[in-house]
Length: 334
Image (cartoon, rainbow, N blue to C red; front, side, top):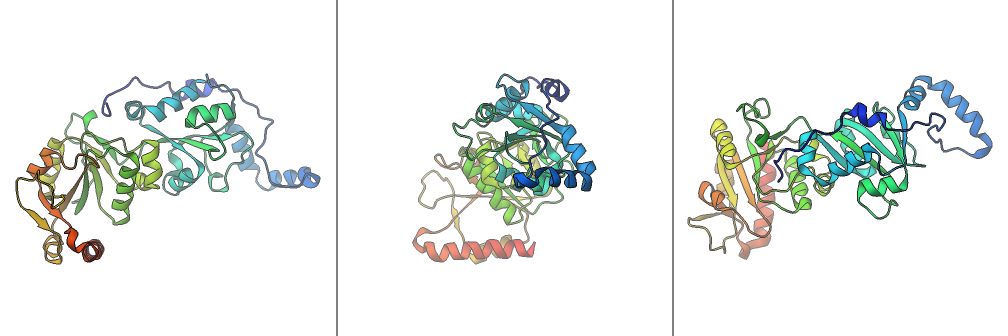
């Protein structure tokens, strides 16, 4: 269960103590063999502090039985473990570089495949650089080939993530929102790729946050992280119940609306058609927009609590253009 607690992981010192170090392996420099010694000497003289720092932080792991490897695999597989550790696993160099534009200091460990250089963008990374064997990289990443997986990062969960299931003091949301105007609420989204894409879209349109109702998949699943393209580290994300959502909307006096197909027969009340008049009426009103799951649509709680809105299918081209225009104008006005 997503919100379940799990046993605490081994402390970082215990993990680090299990590494075997090899201080004679230096970071590789792309140079010709004839001038290797001269260029290496010049580089060391030019940047002695940085060289010393990376030499001290550099470690080696070759065994899949290493405690750090077991910790990383558990982070990849278990949402409950991720939340109990407040850590996440990011697989692949491209996602890591995207994330590091926002949260370079959030990385605990950077795992690199043996033979891979530390990327230029990560030269200022002050944490542990761990060089691992192909067997370890396959084990941690869960992939059969390491051809496209040369880096993995163990990172802190964003400070603006709130799991309300783990708080009982009633102040978990204090300081997270400052009179929000737009919050995207996701109701039972199960596909990690869809979840990540929706988070990225909310971030692109400058929404104030994302609220995940029960039955949503974990936003820090590796596929969701990859689809979000860094948005998960920029946008407040809250995981909670309908009770929590009602408290949030009451606190900020937010209107609740939900996207709903016009042809669906499970709605017991009228459905508004998306129009310029409707968008203009909502322009200055704080709003929660609820989107339902891929297969089941909106939950019964959402149908009861929200006003429903749809895009008329018979005018789909015009409606799509109108919808994008309304969204753009709404956010540029906020």
